[in-house]
Image 1 (cartoon, one colour):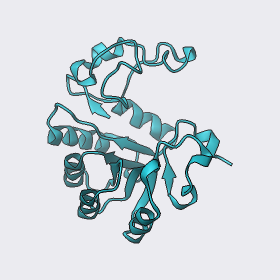
Image 2 (tube, rainbow, N blue to C red; image 1 turned 90 degrees about the horizontal axis):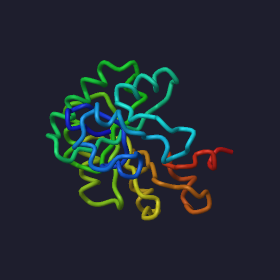
Image 3 (cartoon, rainbow, N blue to C red; image 1 turned 45 degrees about the vertical axis):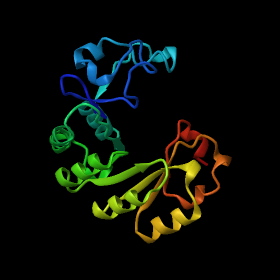
Image 4 (tube, rainbow, N blue to C red; image 1 turned 135 degrees about the horizontal axis):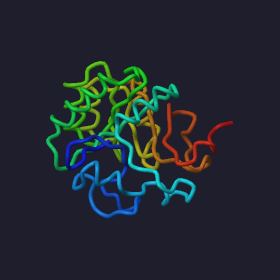
Length: 199
């Protein structure tokens, strides 16, 4: 989730629209109206041609209708972090999706600290490529729910330390079942192919 040029929160993984639309440039350099003119579906499969970018508000309604849980990764580059987090909080407060169904996560410790301050009652997840000492400090400081790590760099010691600290361990982005020897020791995974992990 990230803000547009006109401060609307939209759902897009990348900071740019180059890979996942027929446009080019950064999300925060477009207004919502401009983004809604672009095709965000055809890159994935021709069956999805014409799909438009989704706002956070639209996603929250859809998730509530289907009783889904969400991991909302918060990304802020050029906007004021506190303002974006306060806007996010306002949308979450208006959402039909209950707080228990939502995890708010970020790679940015500044964003996590703002989420902790402005979004009490929501679970927080610290995203990190490799578990650092600063990650450990922030996990404790915000009483995080989870530590979300790149599966390639996780160790048994990380798992043991995080479990002892009371944190869930979520790993990204795992697409091959046989590529991660700690699969049975983590609480959740991110995958582009979830069907491969359902047995």
